[in-house]
Image (cartoon, rainbow, N blue to C red; front, side, top):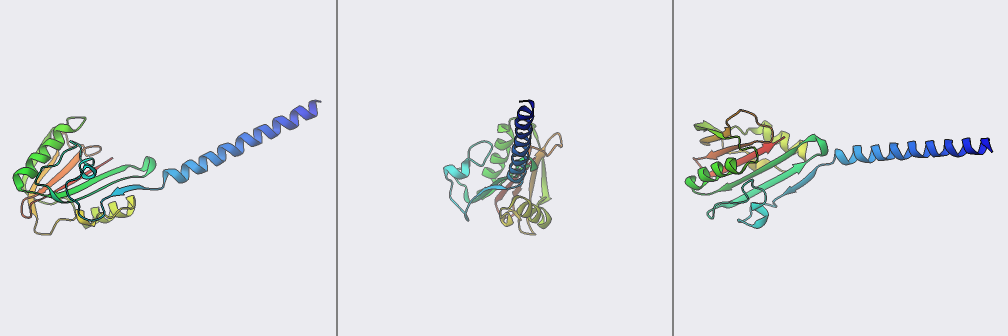
Length: 175
């Protein structure tokens, strides 16, 4: 009788251990797979594109919209979008995004600056998150206004570059 109890207890402990190992393997695999949602080329101002903004709005004049949202389990999240519009609409949208942010970090605008987004950033975002972010690289001659969080913290906060040379807004937020 005692031998039977120990035999079943041993089987139970081994079974629970195997289930735990299987669960950890599934979690480890699932936590390293990217989940990517992106536009398939340029789109018009649609509900799908608007959902990628913090303020859930785009100017009526927005066109040539591209977007990407990606996450890798506990590895982080990325939100990118860009669109073309008149410069006044771009500046107003940049301010609206900071106003709609849940932390209300305020913003610091730096005029007449080069784009903060370079080939290294674009390549890193594309490779790490598994999406195509090549469209986030402004032309080399792009000069505009950089909107950053006033407190200097970039995690969970947007960085927006309004390219005044070409009339394009570039938005990036990571954690």
